[in-house]
Image (cartoon, rainbow, N blue to C red; front, side, top):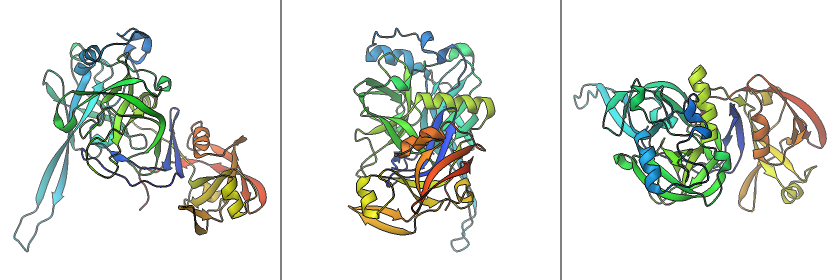
Length: 400
């Protein structure tokens, strides 16, 4: 819900792989603070989903005022309410009952059908969701679908098409470091606040709310993002949405913005939202291994048969990898402050393509669906083998 969750950082590893319409999500690596709960979902239908239909001229950047005036009416305030049962306390004579907690977030309209994009963590577990527009009109919203693996959710409201101001979706693959961006949302409940900044980095990996997957390709920005911004749009200088603000990294020193925020790339959101609107769910493939990338120095220390590849640290019980006979590490060894689980198999190729980084394996997994088979070339001790792994479905949440 609306509380910002902060996840501890971990060594980059691959726990699982998920793909939804070209979106690859793996479990494992660095975890960051999550923004408050506000869910907005992108609907991939209608003219607003194509850059050619944008009301902004490409190559001719708009002023902050122009971007805000055009986009703000399409940004919504989301209030998600959850209910919880409170047990009776006979010691103090207090009766049991039900309590309600409301959290706030942001979202934005993406078509004339009333579809709205937001983060899954904004509306997850909500018993009811209400959406407020710039004219202060408030109405109930229906949850069309949610995907914890990519932190994307789609809401729908029954509103006259003339009252809806869809935002135009851009191309997050074209985003470059230094690009000017504008975030619009409801930080701390302050409706439709704007904050300006630049793209600080691209291609980041952030932990998904389900603690199983990673969201690849995240956009890092120094535009001020705080509690309540979750699910809001991050726009480029042409007024197009290039990302959905989702997380902040506070450095563990505060609860507010310190200039490091992250947005889920709109190309990922577009793909996932399309499946949610079509089927109400997204299924991601699950390989079932945790790996660490090795280099010549590590290979020498551990006397490995190859200089590059992915060392299998753990294998999830019952997964396709486990059934295929892959073996995880048996001994924890610390090298230069980094802990390795040595003794497991080493993956050197997948489907005929060499893999030396987690990202490369993610990309290949991104072409698969649950039930598909992935061929892995591995070293078991010093012998090279090829095994076929039948991919499962990514678990909704991490195992305890």
